[in-house]
Image 1 (cartoon, one colour):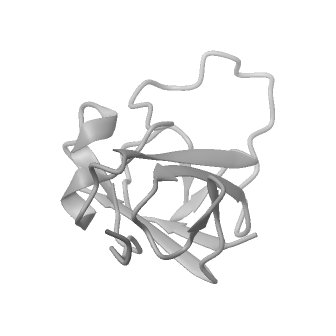
Image 2: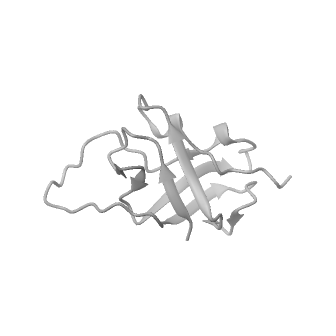
Length: 108
């Protein structure tokens, strides 16, 4: 599983640049993604946690599902990059404001 660093500071799952989810999904819209801007973190959530009694621990290594078929790290919808960087401005309002900075187009 890849190491994940996330700089989307207003995502409710972001804990000190790590994700508190056990897995995330990178949406690359199948074969349509040809660059970083065509990808996003489908799990982005700008709301606060609703279950305050549930512990959310930061995870440095998470399972990453990916629908960006053209990415060289995508093998059967699983990311096999060593490290993945998810980025987005602190003003993100939806998942499409985020992106997978590790995406590399390598398929036609």
